[in-house]
Length: 115
Image (cartoon, rainbow, N blue to C red; front, side):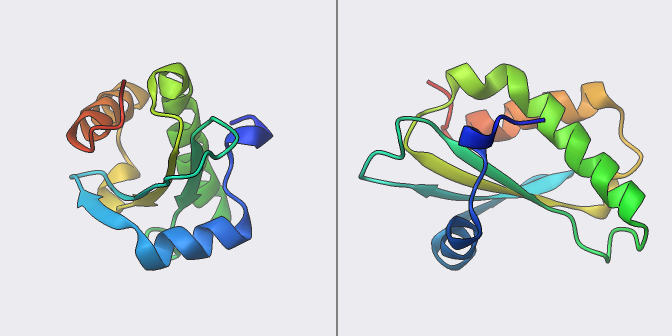
């Protein structure tokens, strides 16, 4: 689980959903805001998994946990003044952890978030 200091608050979720730039991949999309002021000098993340993906909360939570765990190794490499929301797609449900990990790295590079 992501440490609390790396998680978005409800207010930040709303801000990112309204103003974030969108980047989409085959497994998930990213909403990104790069702030000018410092966000306590660390990036912040959130995850959205819609009921359209699966009605069962256990499946949606499993997807969130997988994204969360795949993101952990990249935390020290990500630019500090950024807020990111992951938007899961239906294709993410049956993917392995390794495939999710590779896609996160590819999407972070595509969004130019890695230092």
